[in-house]
Structure formats: structure tokens, C-alpha cells
Image 1 (cartoon, rainbow, N blue to C red):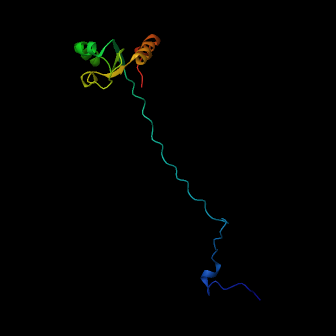
Image 2: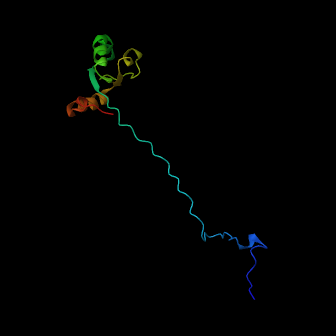
Image 3: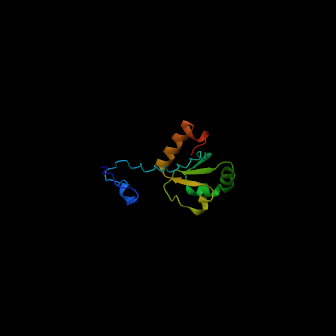
Length: 119
């Protein structure tokens, strides 16, 4: 006698049950996020001008305006200690005041940093 169940009587009986533990389960699809392409860095041309005092820089606005137009960023370095947020000078470029900043920028000039474009 055949002990096989009749598929016509109970069609759900022969379905496979999924077992915990992954026996025969399909692997989950791997979703990878697209990495945005990095745009090439924008290179800027820098110029520099040195002054001993803020007053000298304020008197030289014609030169500052001319230099500002010839580069992407003008660095105004003032040897005397003082504000680096002078609105009259900020319209022309970035202000660096003090002997330490003067030394740093003089070394950059000696190394040729201002001769090349940078990020």
C-alpha cells in the first residue's frame, strides 16, 4: 500500500516550510549607494601686499583695488598688531595683522607659494 498523501486532498501539505537558519533561503539583495564624483578642486590665485601699519594700508586703496582685480584673493599683511576685521580693508582682501602673520607670509613668499595657484 502506498502511504503517500494524495495531493488532490490537501494541496498545502507539500509546501516547504522556511526554517530559521537560512536553509534554502534566497540571499538578500545587496544595495550599494552611488558615490558622488568629486569635482576637481578650484585653484585660486593669491596675491600679497605688506604694510607696517593699518593707516598705510588705508591710504593705499588705489593699489589695493588694482591688486584685488588681478587675483582671486588678496592677502593684506600688516606688521603692527591690530584688528583683522577692518571693514575699510576687508573689501579688498583678507587681513593678517601682527608680527607672527608677517613672518608666516614672508616665508611663503620666499618659498614661492604665491607664485602658484592653490585650493
